[in-house]
Every structure is written in structure tokens, then in C-alpha cells.
Length: 180
Image (tube, rainbow, N blue to C red; front, side, top):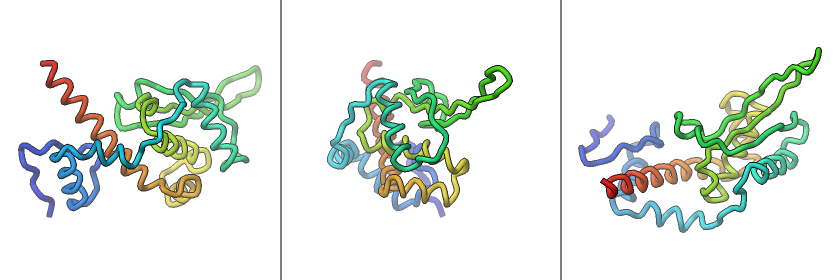
């Protein structure tokens, strides 16, 4: 049985599918304004990957370490439209390009711009996720095994990233209310 949320309780959009007990703990952190403190304590390390070139180099370094025998990446960029258009935080696309009589496939990773200022662990997690799609197209058991091979704390980072996005949205909403 799902508990009925109270009218004052804000929805937890990034945590759909989690147990009511987990949702209650997160709601308590939000209500007590401790979610930001929790995240700051666990994810202090910032990154220097501020532009597309640095992002490309970071992705290629991970790919070369774990996925040497996969197709090369053509482009890795921050995309400001990604998070705004839905739930996607990153994408891997294979774009066919005709060159004379040959067709070459360009593999491009686009990462939501929110990761430019996110903690280093979250950027690494999203890069690992998108790189895993080079070998495993679907979110299958093999896909997640590959993710945890490249990043052993993958599932904790994914959950905490959801908390980070929830906290970020709450701060943005609070900022919008104070401007009214």
C-alpha cells in the first residue's frame, strides 16, 4: 500500500520506484533542510572539466582504461538542452555520415550542462553510464555489471545524483519564490 502524500509534501520526481521507507527518509532530509549538508559531506571533490574539450578528454581516458576495443568517440560535449527536455542526463548517439561511397558512424556523447558544476563523482558516473552503452545498448544486467566494473559505487552514485538533482530543483524553486 502506498502512503498518500500530504498536500504540503513536495513530490520527489527523481525517486519514482523507490520504497516508501527511502522516500520518507529523503523527505525528512528535505523537511529539515539537511539534504544539502548530506551531499556536501559526501561529495566535496569538484572537477576541472569545464569545457567540451576537457569533457572529451575525460571520456576518452575512461574509455581507454575500460573499453579499449570499442569504437572511437567523435564528440563529447555539454548540452544545455538535455535536462530541460526530459529525464535524460546524457545520451550516446551513433550518427551515420556519408563520405563518398562509404558510411562512417560518428559516436557522440552529450552530457547535461548541470554536470559542469556537479561534484566530480557524478560527472564520472554519467560518463561511465554513457560509455557502457558503447558495448551494451539496453539497460540490462550486463549493462549494469559493466557500469559497476568501471565504477564500483555506481548504484550509490546514481541514487545520490538523484538526491543532488532533487536538492538543486528545490533550491531553484526557492529562488524563484523569493523573486516573486
